Length: 64
Image (cartoon, rainbow, N blue to C red; front, side):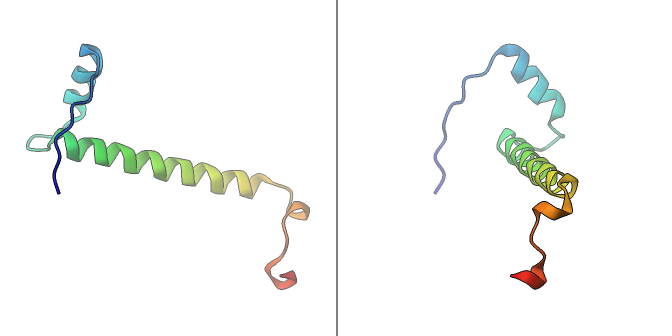
């Protein structure tokens, strides 16, 4: 199920994407990679926020 869609970007953004793209890599593959990296960064940030919270604010697993 492949449906080609156009995503309007500025010329500056297109150049940045082109510079990030590896030889032989499609823009679709690059965008998938960037989206995955973004999701990983968000998850990592959430874990860091949880670790920084005071232990008293969290419920111990033994208490659940």
